[in-house]
Image 1: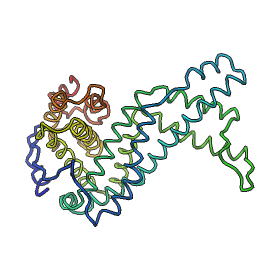
Image 2: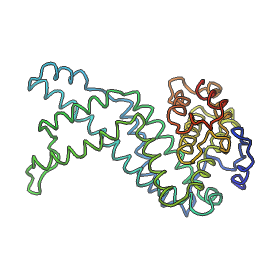
Image 3: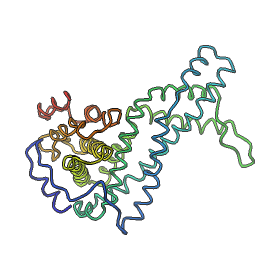
Image 4: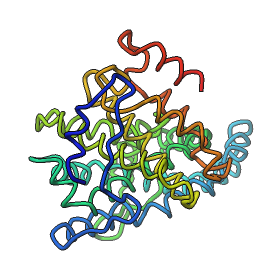
Length: 334
């Protein structure tokens, strides 16, 4: 990766140069030193990702049964709605537990990549850098699918109402095998509150990443190092797409999604944001690259179709007075 971080000092406002990064984000592999952590985090965050996304893609709402139970609250209708909601709650529990794992693992990644000399870390731990990119890709994909399933919250709200009326799933038992109604009710109600707060956000996984990263920066005073790392990932993705016109559509989509999430994260971590004149991120060229998405033959139904709305509505500083009007207009108009 060489001296690319030092090259980031050569700036021209939001037309900052895109450094030539000697890092292949598509083919990076872990070395022996990072292999243990790589395998550990991969097993917890990367390997479960396809199944979680598949659950969202194939999500079937219980809204019809819920409406019937509300309109005619007979025991039969309520039991049917309850049985339909329970598998949905299990899925939501899986999503929430994944976010908890993400909250635990992300600081470990940031510690390896952002402690000390970031330039050397990114050269040395290319497998972990690629792992971080894969996590950011999942975050984008998950939130895209979540927003397309608005009935998730309605289904879960019905589950919470039934909990308040004394229903519970009977999954927890005492040591002697007898279910404890009070304990089950307390456990499920507490967990339901946490899950409800999690899914209340339009982009819950992105919020988890932003909050976890911000807390890490605050705790360890490594704002510059984390921003340098995010800038490097943005540059890697930008160059991977802009320099390889013949790459596979799924690879281009992966890089564009990671590029956008990196910009959003940077915008939340840097006090001046990603859109300011002092930002090392070239927003104008990034937007132009997104606009050229058809060049890469990415399917129109891909989550990559949501790149500009994601950048527009998840940013923190886009509407600041300090954001150049040309940049703001470009992002808002695209």
